[in-house]
Image (cartoon, rainbow, N blue to C red):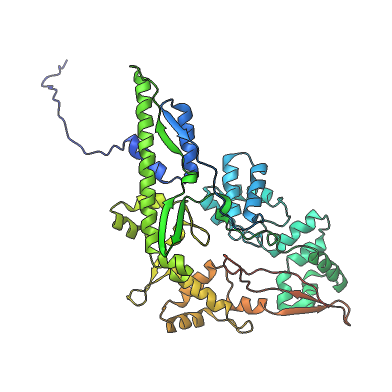
Length: 453
């Protein structure tokens, strides 16, 4: 039998360093990410649960849109709120709506939209299928063929012949109607019948709407005005809630005391949020006065880190403020993030914003001879002659961001492909449009079917 001997107990304290974030700090960080509209909803909910908190709703919102008609985005948003109920589906549907081009087509890939919406591609595809049932038929199509197919199906005329032609539209560009007939195995008369049905469709179902900015779907958070040559930047008070404390008695109840402290903390956090938001926006907009006066040509390189250093705060603070804020400028409503742009080049004479470079690239392509479009290498050389030195690979990257096809495709798209349906003067034309300049939007490679003769 053995006994336990020599056992002693000691108590030792080892100091360690840990970071504990208070609820006030968390609340302040959360409020910084909110738009005025979100802040109003948040404070109203808090007031319903706290008798010491008083929130007055914003006054009636001012009207920002200058157009009399309804925009495509506003029209689609009304249908979204009727078609969907759950928050995840509405979030995905809104992300899809934000990806719409003025033609009514979807301008981004499903996988990219899924990342932005925090969902899986399969979920986005399911919501997209329901959105493609919206009026007018053809909205949310991913290409011309899908746009036409949706309308043919709606009109109950979609057949295997139509599907064969839609799946081989590119064949017409390559070899004309004869090549299409050979590829599909259809006769010329069958193809002519299909083409008549296609011309009855609308290849741009979104073009009938006012081309208002999608941002106009809600009121701006910041107002930027010019008066007598001076610029003023202020919060849009018509969309901000007024938060104050009530004079309700607290007695000695610790629960009520905590609620009053929470109300005081929220009111203080809202005030700090408003002051920081205005401070950040003034710093950003003041740096980009050239952008306000001259458009994208006047946009200077500006990063969130630059603003953070100027204001003496962390970069994450700037990112939170910038997220989702809308700025009403004299010209139109813009997202605050559009005032930021990365610089190009290393020399002081070559520093240029990325968006400004894309604008110059867009102008070059818009002015190119249709029969001799500029290659990426030629565009890079042309930009270099004007002091903007970027590589051919960078040109290709920016071109894709602008949704502009390669030179070969642009050349092919500019051709008029004629096909005969029986000879004589009864000659029809499949006209594929190339670039189209439109207000407030980037060039888009769209197609339309027209008939002449």
